[in-house]
Image 1 (cartoon, helix red, strand yellow):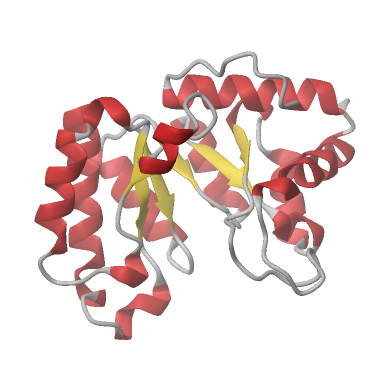
Image 2 (tube, rainbow, N blue to C red):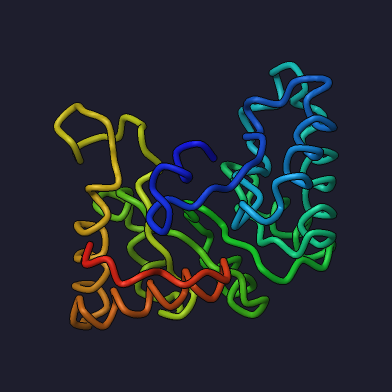
Length: 213
């Protein structure tokens, strides 16, 4: 949130607990922070489920924690950003059962039949650098409606073959957009405009005319 104050109209904050970072006693404090900061946030997240969390402290509570954030999403009318590695079906069912209307499934990798359920629910997905290596993600990028697609790099993280051993950063987003446009056979300009509109609609913010491209 401090970074967003330094770069208004360019950085937009979301707050949550990643499922690999759940610790006892943090949920109530973070819910209080989110509620108190409601007018400064554009979303709750990233939160969700991760198959790797089951052996970590608090890992058995991750569904309980997700449900708490889903209820907060509805209470505060904030969209929610969902992590679902290895538990895509379980995460989707939790979101749908909670009746949340605005959700982004970050770095969505499938399967294809679940993508179609997300589409019917009107949930957005984000596509990252895995589009350069994953056949499944390339298929998702081709099939997903353009009005439900966002892009990301999940940085800073190490990712194979994209940054020559370095960390991902937002600077990679144009390459991701270019690859999606090629797969779909649409001009990059059209895809960029669609992604911007999707961002504004999901998060209910208006991106200023800054000239960043």
